Length: 151
Image: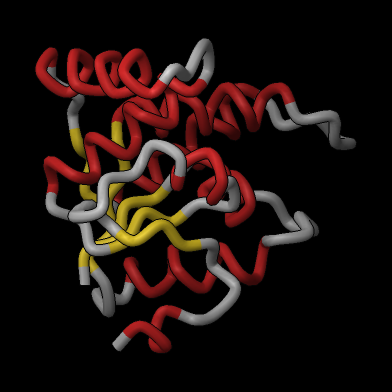
């Protein structure tokens, strides 16, 4: 099963004590063990670093610590570079559906996952992705259950 990870899942899996830590971490660990094929867009890696360094937690996440988190994620998830064609498709999809502003960033994750032929787009922001999804695209799913439930 091919699973594309959104930033919301990567951040939750990376912060001890995050309310969704266990749910997210189960999926990252499944990818690390090879039980699922996990992938992440280059944009999601950048967003993960930016979010980790901006979180209002104590102690603050240092930029170097956030960089190490991103590097570890790259070891276990396939990194999908975003092409110009994907950017164009994401912009067009948002424009055609009347979405504005930050919807583009969700569209970038989703269209990248579609091009990779993901089975699942994993996110805690399901409403954001569902409004952008195509019927034949990946299933938009929040990780409440372990990956084994999808087999």
